[in-house]
Image 1: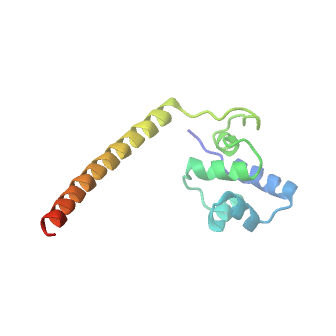
Image 2: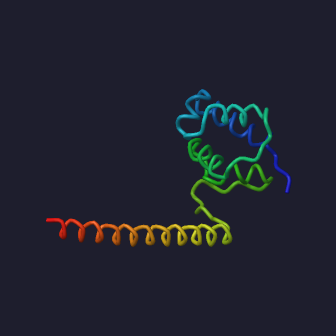
Image 3: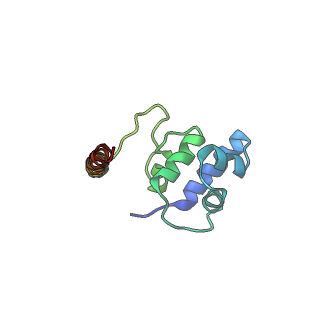
Length: 127
């Protein structure tokens, strides 16, 4: 799948100019480092970026959250009011990850409960 980072840079630069922002303002509003904004905006480094980075930039620029991702992939960007869609695979993998994390948290809480019971028994015996 080809990626068109030059098109992403063009969209960002045009929108930043429309809004009258400086690079630093976009970085602050999007919570993306100014160095990354600079790299993308000036198309100096072509490297894989997180979908969240493009989503944060899109949102800060007042575009649909998936606008820059669509431009990158050479697709028609969604309208601002269109719902955000996620790939089914991504959703299931995120749910699986959350389930694993919840299992880990449950195990840790069980361990803490057991440790606390041991400490409480020890304190009661030593009174």
